[in-house]
Each structure stands twice: as structure tokens, then as C-alpha cells.
Picture 1 (tube, helix red, strand yellow):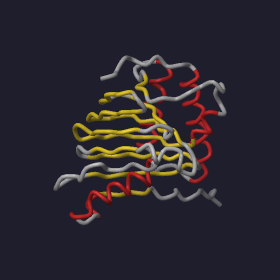
Picture 2: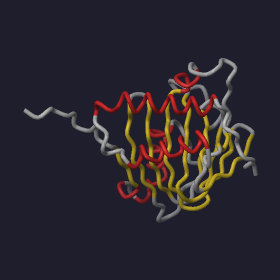
Picture 3: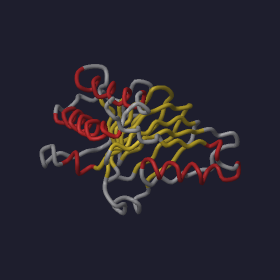
Length: 213
């Protein structure tokens, strides 16, 4: 009798094609919030705006692939600290460009960049040209307890061209490409391996190139 295998958990998808034209801005804001935590879209998206999301949870870890036209949003100071738990985001950019304001720092990211941010600071983003990115979103506490207590996180662009930074970039990219192929039995291993790789990268103090505006 052949061995049984778990049926893969469903990958969730969302697209502006599913939203009414006059509700596109609110629908996009809701979709961002369900994927990355609370973000306010600070200006109405233009007519014809196109965006799509594809995501899957592995325990407390969420993998989110996003494509979107130029737009902008922000995490206001009054939102910071009011969510159920703080989280950390790790983003790779496959194509396009985006500008971040994380805390008091401005960052410019483009294809091939790896950026880290947390929900514990006011933030803003502006997509400058059509963007294709993949993000990991996971509880900040899960990362902090594996690193020295003095570790503090602020938004920064990490070096994804060499060493463990390159391995982390490839890992995030591979997760998105294989998202439909993981089974339920894989979830714990994916979560554990991703967390250990991220913490190893952070503890090694990846040298960040100067990317401020």
C-alpha cells in the first residue's frame, strides 16, 4: 500500500481584478493589512491601478509575493505598538523600485536588494515603478530570543550579493517559487529553517551598503 501524503495547504491569492473600480483603494489597503500588518494607503490609487498578492502561512511565518503599480502607504505613529504582536519583515525585490522611510531613515531599494524592517517604528513606502517583491513576515519575538538582548532592529538594506546575505535572498526567492509544492508536513521545517537562517544572517552583522537617499 503506497504511503499517504498530506494535501498541500491552499495558497491564498488576491487581485484588484476582484475589487470594484470605486473601491480599489480601500480593497488594496485591506489586502496590505491582511498581509503585512496595518498600513494606511495615504492617497487614492489611480484609475487602472493593478496589484496582486499570493501568500501562504507556515506556522507563525508568512510568505507574501506581491506585484503592484506605483502607490504609497504609511504606518502612522498611533498604530505602532497597538497590534497583537510586533513583527519583523524581510523583503527581496525582484524588479521595480521602492522608497522606504523607516523610523528616521530613508532607504531606496531596487532589483536584487534585501531589506529588513519592523512594525515597531513609524514607516512609509512609495512604489516608484511597478514592483515585484517577496516578503517574509514573522513575530519579532521569535527572532529576538535567538539573538543577544542588546540587538536592536531598524530598517536597512542588507548585502545580498555575497555570503549569508546571498543565501538568505535565495532562500526567500525559492520559498515563493515553490509555494504550491510544500505539504502540511513541511510547514514546521520551513518555519524553523527560515528562522535559523534569518537569525544567522542578523547575528553575523551583514555589512549593509550605503543606500540612504
